[in-house]
Image 1 (spheres, rainbow, N blue to C red):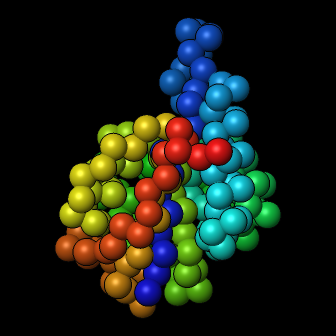
Image 2: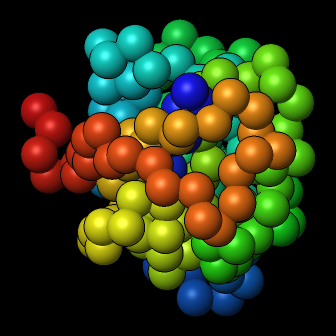
Image 3: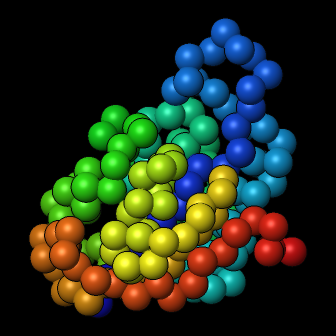
Length: 163
């Protein structure tokens, strides 16, 4: 079994309308929510072996803050593949991972995050900013993951439900 944590980036700032979309930072609510998600991961024992993030500033910052909040994931990497990507791109990247990663988190954008959760669990879910889905995958090796893989939605946390 593999564990996939699907996290939509936290709330971003629209203060500087001159910034390119990829360069938008988190706002204060986004920073608070990212810290909460990190703490939640620590409490749940879901510390990722690897976090793969979109290259967008808001996603990278979310990944870093979540990692710090959960006691630091083993590794964080960013990829341009995840910037505004559909579910199939996430599945393709994940299916190329080595065997030694058991718990992996992806940090990206909607509608891709909602599409990924729905595709892997067959349950459509809304993913507001900083929403986290915990999906259990019935695979032993990442290369076994494909669009037909049916995982189980173990839990879905939304920031408003966290204390």
